[in-house]
Image 1 (spheres, rainbow, N blue to C red):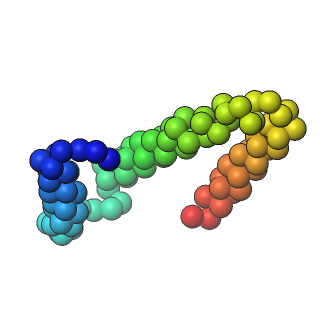
Image 2: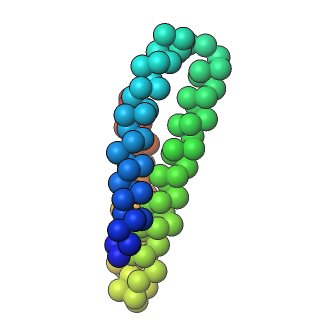
Length: 101
């Protein structure tokens, strides 16, 4: 990306700072955190749901839309059907695997 040097430095600083900050926060909270408390389970469920929603959005809107709306797929009905079936089968197998995760 063509950013200015100052912008690159700020992004590198925040990238390098967030991981150690998260580790230190996790170590600090490990003494008071109870994984089986109702509050912890609700927070974990909400964060997992938000993460899954963002991943679905990125996969469906940003990544697949470019492929499915391209001229190669739009002009070939057989290829379009195969692409849709591949996506549905992949999502189905991922859901099946999530049962054991």
